[in-house]
Image 1 (cartoon, helix red, strand yellow):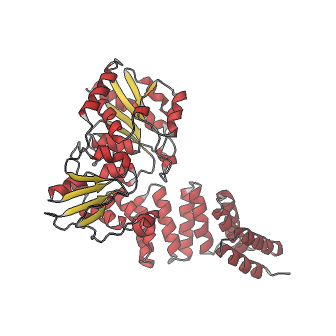
Image 2: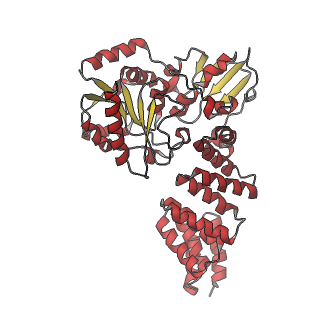
Image 3: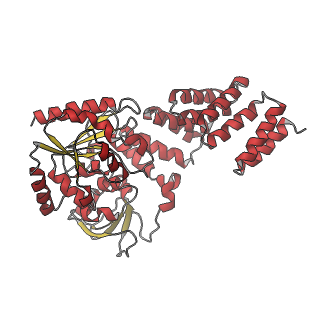
Length: 451
């Protein structure tokens, strides 16, 4: 009969090559021979975690810990499963147990940082990542995650520098572009041509395209490549010399820069964020056409509404809402609600908790959305591209922010240094939109009374 040790060794070979069924079978053979084999239980737990069975993973690894409470790896590997279940405090306790047993356990420090960050404790996350980097200075993912903690805390100078590690530590690495021209890092631009290329999402482009005008002010001829949906909108920035679609032939240029690297090149801090608005504009004729239609509604106020973001966003489930959760807005009289929601969530309009007008079939790109937005009195939205659009146009915008905010919204503030006309309404508990919605009703009612 195969010994438990031999079965575990065989299972490890399977697991390392991705053959999880073979590994599971081997570990279970080890347990048949020795039902209290902590290593086999622990490894079965890691397989359950890999398979997305997080409850089972926790149960198996915790059983291993009860048998052998002195193995740092058991605690370190139990933590990610607890984190996946949003059991953050238990996960943090696991990592601290691992570190108590093995103070120089780099993976435990790294995972501790991630869990602190997810539980909205970026200062503690920063300390953990820094300790991990003391042990392993080449860990690109730790530098990338440390950048997010610094940016969320408002340490922008430090954050932008390590934000460059997105090209080695995230999925962005597969889309990094190589050019003959060097990346611009702040050199003089008088008489030079600068090529700015968009990256990441539509909201990111809307937020950071503001730097194109600053580059032009330094004497550059500015070329911008952006998503097709934004070409018409960014055409309103007069300082951009040329706009191109992805894949189109590029003119010659002296420097190039990914759009999300512009804050670093401009040495952006909280004190000097370029917040002059509006920096994006709608076509006046289209705005007048929308105003004419809105006037026929006869409402004192016309407000846009967006309740969900795009599914490709990694945190979309946490930032998005269901239209039914906006039911408290029905308490506000004298407002016509206008949908700006695109995509599959717009189907929720069929069961809207109050009347919502839907003209989105006429919105073909963001220039169209900008014209309708300009004609409105304000916008209520979750954290999605329309929040950036309304803010960039200088419109009153009330943005519903999840418990763990994206770095650009910082912590605890009700205002945004990026968008002076925005008001941030934040979750105080993960998943609870009830309290923010009640606050939103009060805030909008007070805003109308103060006009």
